[in-house]
Length: 79
Image 1 (cartoon, rainbow, N blue to C red):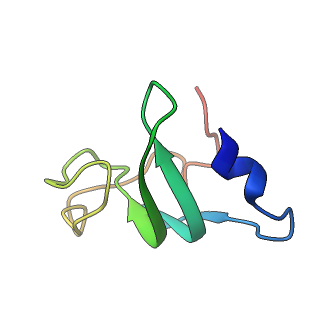
Image 2: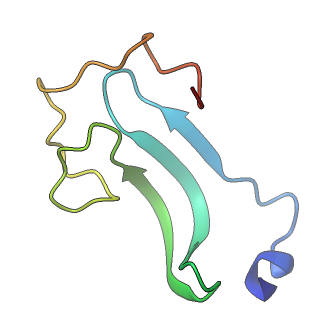
């Protein structure tokens, strides 16, 4: 993934789990398909965590009033 190597280590990306909401991505990232091809570069966006978004994997706000994360913020990333 050549574009990832171009990034400076000081260019950190932050993932913030919003309580009963999406994962907020702060910083610039490349979205890469299964073959390793960059399909989009994007910064400062939210990823759906409730499964209700019509624009998955991105959040469209459908979680509002319709989603309650298990274990609060979902402190466990993997189960």
